Length: 281
Image 1 (cartoon, one colour):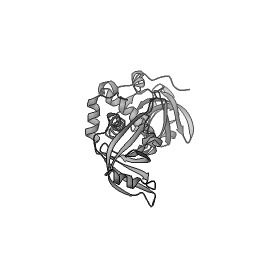
Image 2: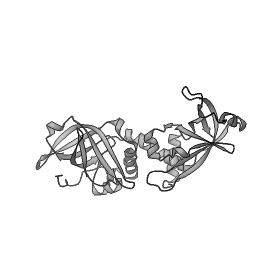
Image 3: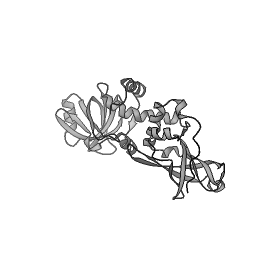
Image 4: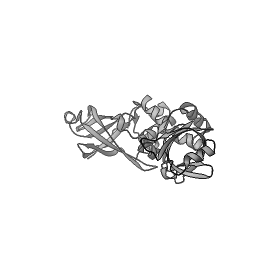
């Protein structure tokens, strides 16, 4: 942690201050939230809780009230501390901190008589580590919509910047893996080259696997072939444009692309691709 400048963290805070993030399974994975180590501290006591949503100004948490939590909150005049614990992907150490807050509302969660959802408002700006972890996800989500068609040609330099292991990968068509070569990637799709006949592949659903390093991660993203072109001088090959199902694009993939796009100038990242690599056999 701490790789972002104070200026960038301030930009995250000002830009996303009031945007709520829901801790879905995907969100828990990309932030590295250690759910078993999240607690609500009231006085000197700790209560396990589940963070349902958070922003930079507050959160909604779910906790069991059968252990006297409501009375304890009243005794402290609604002041609590929310303990967060993260191990971001690729990091060996955990990041733990408390955020001072005040309980603004409490209501039964669903139809339960044992569990309440608490709305808490942070008393101060949360720690920079928290802003960096959550802001990085929010920034990737916003830019994946604004810059969805920004193509990144997979030159040797861009492969290194993205930490993509290789352009040689697999595309799954009707659950059958076929070897292919990635030519470019974007938030909304990718271009690949494979052996085949365009008329038999166009409009078919497919999934592409993209392998990353540092940390080692693989994403298989489904979509549909929307465009096909012949490969000059290689009659047995076809170049295909795969349009991703936007609801199936993993947040971790969005973060990888966004980190690269926001740290590289347009002139460096967008341009003609290198000479075609050797065809996959």
